[in-house]
Amino acid sequence: MTHHPSISESGLGNWHDAPAVIGASVDAIDTPALLIELDAFERNLAEVHAVIQTAGIAVRSHAKAHKCPDIALRQIHAGAVGICVQKASEAEAFIEVGVKNILITNQVVGVRKVERVARLAAHAHMGLCVDNIVQVHQIGAAARRHRVAIDVYIEQDVGGARCGVTTNAAAIELAEVIATYSPSLVFAGLQAYYGPAQHMRKPEERLQAIRSACDKVKDMVSALNAAGYEVNAITGGGTGTYPLEAESGLYTEVQPGSYVLMDNDYHKNSPDEEAPELLPVLHALCTVISVSPTHAVLDGGLKCFAMDSGLPRMTLPGWSVKGISDEHTTITSTPGTPPLKVGDKVRLIPGHCDPTVNLHDWLVAVRNGKVEELWPVSARGAVF
Image 1 (tube, rainbow, N blue to C red):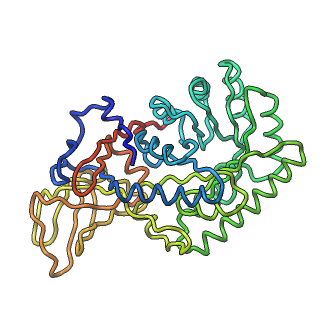
Image 2 (cartoon, rainbow, N blue to C red):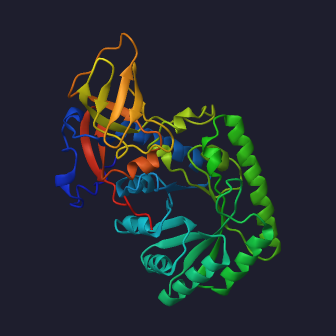
Image 3 (spheres, rainbow, N blue to C red):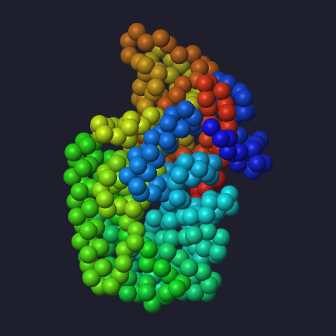
């Protein structure tokens, strides 16, 4: 496999703050730390991309999951046409390392934010989503001031009940306003992401959800076409449903994000027999700092794990998480389980990968029990 220099190898990132040294054993990593199991990472990356690309459509990997340029560069090398982000400041972190095609799959509102997007469009192919005329006017004015062209996707609410227009009339009205800013704004197509479907547990539930989404998208595309607006791209999908969007014959690109990390919540989904099994990639490594007859205590707590999708899961047989506080996780065991001692290191799988990664400065990439690379989470905290 071709080696791609990591950002840490190129001199970026503060090595003194890194939790590990390249070549060291996993046991020597300072904790709490987030590990990337490289064999599983590379397998998930290759298999998900193969499913999407075999269907003849594009992969646009969602970088909000990892916020890590090292990962984004590997996704692009594996065939992704570009990446998605959620915020303008996230986009900036990836452009700084050479990513040239970025879609902000979100509404950008506010003069300073749209000015930032317009400045970035001088360095990369930029796109963003709209569902309100105010957003169009703001980004259109900024694009004109900076003499750049920006792709605009009308976001359609296909069932998530979050952002997006719900009527064909609203979409046509937005397309009309976008056209008034040509060539500074380019109507690129529809953003049609069904977020809740990613975590529907049964394959048949996910199938019905995406079929419903496709019906809504087809109807809106027909209405836009009839009004004289060509819809060149339909983008959306995620780790839980990407095979369905890929085989729909409707979507032109798919946006999986968590597939290169995975988490405990995604592993609660019953697998689709037609899709490859995705392996756990992201692990939190913690140290046992206290033991008692009834429990043990780890050195990572709420400042290490996001809790919106529940407690992290222990990978050590017989042990489970009892509770979590700011700096500690308390674990208990079933009768007969071998005890832990102070200084032991254990792994846990976070409940939700995206916000967990945002709590850490580094990802420690390991293979066969050794630290192979150190990847800065360069877009950590980029929330504006």
